[in-house]
Image (cartoon, rainbow, N blue to C red):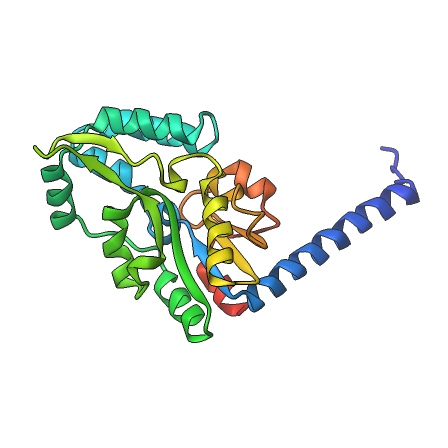
Length: 244
């Protein structure tokens, strides 16, 4: 077998690419350390599950919704389309939502409570920014000592009879690009200079910019489009704690 000698320009190109990647990662780690605030996606990031899938299971519509959620997370349809179709299938009543909240305990991703506490101890403000629903996220925020005003999520609407009446389409997170809009709003209203967003899905990628950095999270599920595009991709929150 003949030995293959790679041209020096090829080796230099590879070396340069490696150095650039390392430099980029170091920059993001520095941004992470100096951030004024951190915004977290909720489903499959802060918690191990997709809350809308769990609500669908509770309402007997789980299998149909799981397929749609996977398509939405991979970017195969717009977020508005996905949200509208999924909720139309689930058709949750106010009574069902209340029963779900009374019987279902959120499953926190290992390390998230320690990470949030570490961020808050360093004076960094923490926000939950989700395409999910505020009524499902409020109990999660309470257990993480995150104030209700730091939740940005969608709102379900019900008729006076308690039947499902749609969702509030005026909320930024009800549409594609909404998480970026929330980060922009937070920066403007709070005066933050540096904000980092952490999440697992394609809608999280859209948050940076205006977020100064995006950290992809794959501790619960690895979405290849996120992993390939995130300059910093982690599967364990301990990695983020160590870099504070």
